[in-house]
Length: 265
Length: 343
Image 1 (cartoon, chains in turn blue, yellow):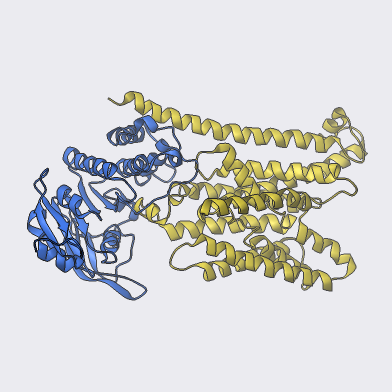
Image 2 (cartoon, rainbow over the protein chains, first blue to last red):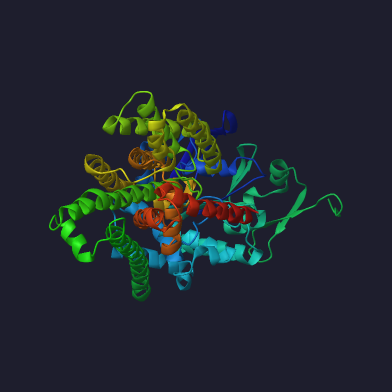
């Protein structure tokens, strides 16, 4: 049981506040998706949760303990984070990149043990990239590359995995592919997943817990079917939309109206 | 399920390590071949037998002098100084994540030279005190670049641009110092501007060798950080690395290596830029290739010195001129291809 929580957290850049006194608890063992318009502070919030961005106020706790009081390596054994658009160094191969996820588990002169190899192998297999182990990362397709990065975070063996827009630059099929993979991770290992997503309808389908943000605060949060209403979409995105039922998953499906195609209001 | 792939992961790592060892071994072979050549060839041609006897202190007194006092120290100096430049360059480029961010391009080497020249001309210093001023010069330039280029995080292109500015400033001041110097000092100033390994022997050689060895041992501690760092600041932090401390620690060691080597040999052009590039290309595993860069730096500098002494038409040229002739085209090629990639 690990519980990551933001307690009246303020975040910003150079004195410019992006998030003011925000509270959020990531439900344990569930998938949380954070959505919101551009520049609403959703990525900043995720970065704050992973201690990649300094807090202006408040605190982030893991099982009640302030994460800034924790050694970074210890935090890295409990909370994994995949930042937006990571770039692999030239020439690095898949197995080597995934092996770097073992860093927080190794000592000062830590060599790779056979345990490390087993963990890396499992990570490669569960993300479906074991066949690519000796290929240079730079030669892979976008979808494969994103799987490799997720394999690296998996090799970190954390109970909580945070992902900042993991589906950006992927086509629809690979977006679904990736979200299915994260669902398996959550179901098979009980990993708590929290991610920033752009695509509202995919977020509504894949998340157990949906957080809608606008202008640095949370507009609504809860089960997607409770949260994703016309009113909330309008408030957060300034978007007129109809919300219907996703015929496949039964989750809410946001159908935006726009200026030229409105029929029934 | 996974024992076969698990050994596959271990096998891949073995292959990778074998490649690193192979590159290092190859470079050592180059050093041995070039070193043997340098022992045998010269104004006084020696046979292998005479050279071995001379190295052991046996045989003809003249041969012993040539081998032990002239040729061997010069070879050792080229290897030690080249290794220090190669390692420093690899550390700079890895930790600043830019193949251009090498201490010679950034003006760290010229800072060390400037410090030494000020010590030499204005204060009349020599020996360890002179090395101290070279350290100070390199350190001041490094600090100034850091202060001007740091904006709550690493912007490696800003580092390079600010560093190039300082490199120009230092070389102008060096040129000015040369213009003001007496004729008999000008030769020494030339060492500090071009770089040469011809006059490093005895105590100074021992000092530089010992210092390089100690610093290399310290590098082993920060070497492991380069893997996570090469993935970018956010990824490195997420993996539990104290990014700023890791980067400052790495750069301090690299600056010390540059200062040490420069205080003895002057800023041998482009070795710190080119050696890691060659090493990384040969090892080709996406890592910083620290050991391979060290060996490549030693091999490159020794070969350049041998070429400068014997193979250039006309006069014997100091090693820095040869490395400059090799390094400048590489730099141009790097600039041209980087441009292409960023488009």
